[in-house]
Length: 123
Image (cartoon, rainbow, N blue to C red; front, side):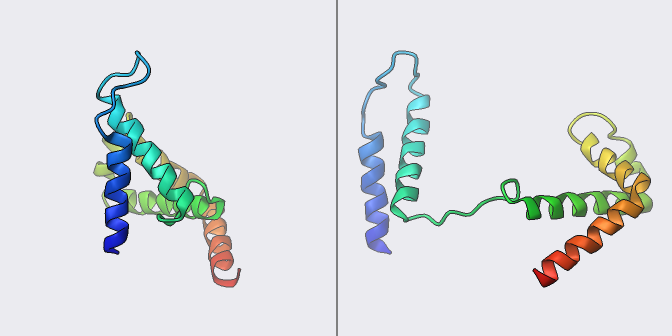
């Protein structure tokens, strides 16, 4: 492990080490971002960092997360409706919309939950 840490530090020095931006449109604030992205892509190519996909890129995980979000919002709205109902617009309005979907489409959501439980358990 200490060798890997030294290698990462040396790579960061190589990518960030006092170079000026090559393109005139880049500002000095963009140079570390570009250097870090180059470093991460190099480490991923070399196999030094494990690649893990998020739920967005795995369809089964995405459906599971959406079903859990809908069920949780509908359950919370049944317990404490004031928390969900006061945020109908904006970013927090997503939770109100999920609660509304969970209430109106509850038979379909429950079928989806049973289907996803079977997929997770048996496949």
